[in-house]
Length: 360
Length: 268
Ligand SMILES: Nc1ncnc2c1ncn2[C@@H]1O[C@H](COP(=O)(O)OP(=O)(O)OP(=O)(O)O)[C@@H](O)[C@H]1O
Ligand SMILES: [Mg+2]
Image 1 (cartoon, chains in turn green, brown):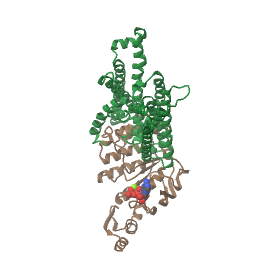
Image 2 (cartoon, protein in one colour):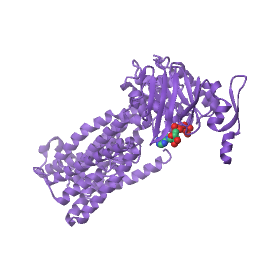
Image 3 (cartoon, helix red, strand yellow):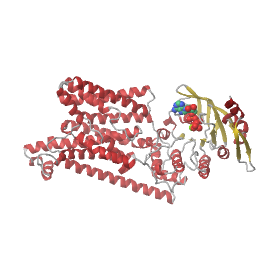
Image 4 (tube, rainbow over the protein chains, first blue to last red):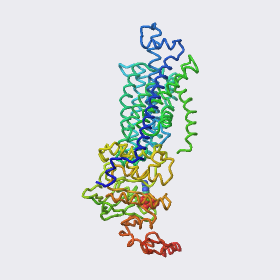
């Protein structure tokens, strides 16, 4: 319709060519960085598998992975039923939480947001606590499954509640955060109330559940989380252009043609699926969802086409590192990785804030 | 070519009426309309209404199409809006920001086909002569440069209507002039521009028409030389000022003090 702006010259000037060329170099660099992150994740995955109290050497593990017959029965159980699922769980949970975190930060336009900001994890904890305290179980499923299933149902329910509440008001990100905080406090109060009336034994179980532990991983829940992650991560990635546009400002994004309300809703659904599944299986693991995205951002920038995969990988790397650290720091203790993740996460996070203090 | 017009627009925030029957006669493609008026008159609200950010009563027409009921994202490609406040902590460079806008535009079929998105973005950057800052992070730019970056994003997808909310407020005299020249060249390619300006001299020089908004109503509208008078300044802004046009036709405003009405109010 318009004249000169509508038909950009077929030939770019020298400046334009220079810009396009250097942008392509930047994209190549980012791709290389992603490959480096992927390599680091694979290396750490292997490192996590070979770390542990029983003396399986790296070569034992390697040959065992290639040829399971080379292991004796106990070694096979340790490798295939303990180490491998726990390591894969660390990678998957880290990736899921950090992806959920980056979406949350963009959608809420708040660098301090995390997948837990809106109460998803508190709801999961409440669901788990209810299951543990009442001792109920779903027929055909084991008691362990009931805890996970209940945690999942509660977190999804809390997201639905949040949606209804924000629909009542005009659904801006501030309302979302405020209602989310209100939910966090209510759920935490409900958990305390349950613990107040519960037996000492169930209180201990609830507390242990909330700490976040990879040792609960088995092949079934690894498979479930793997499927959820494999479905949801590509969907997040497909929304990356819209998320980048949203990052330029809500009104901006709408003016570009993004249906921001829908984007926000879909994003929250993705976040809650990832978070609820991860938390249901391993309990609350804080900081990964907050710190993972920030590390990715510092490495790769704000373009979500790169930021989302980089966040997933950073999250996986962080949780694998925490898992390895937990095993190395206190061998034999089976230290919950949630504690170590927070201990590792806090200094990293503080350092990030100190470094970034001038930027925002 | 389709013109933009507003017919009796009413809007309110939380029950408080902000626009009380705003009408603007057809703004033709290529025209620049400067919207001016005192703080809180409702200028930003008019632009937001055109962009579709708030529900309004009345009729907004673009050519023969009634766009009043369209959602903002459904107006993409037709109407582009550049907000008053620029975002902070963007973490993208200028080129990337334009490119990410183009990615959206291309999905909705409002971008130009036949060229790669990267080359389209680069062409736009060249057109606006932003080569120097194209690869700088937006957060590291000066206020004026940020404004230019925001303009580049707003021009993606070749909007028929460009809405600019106080784009020159943060700019020095030279950059104000340069910015408005760029806007003039954008308009001359057939874009309708509605721009909020507080600098009346700049508005008079750079616009084809001025609309003065006062308390949610259009107080005066027309060619700058007709609209900007001593009476309007007293009535709308409450200042007493001598308004003259010098031999080159430039508007000169010599503010003498508050208007007599204002003085009377203060004494009371
Ligand atoms: N989100 C909002 N909620 C409630 N009231 C609002 C909101 N935005 C604007 N208003 C009110 O609407 C009126 C018009 O605001 P608007 O921003 O359109 O003014 P403006 O002419 O752009 O002023 P300025 O020159 O200061 O930018 C003001 O009285 C303001 O208080
Ligand atoms: Mg305003």
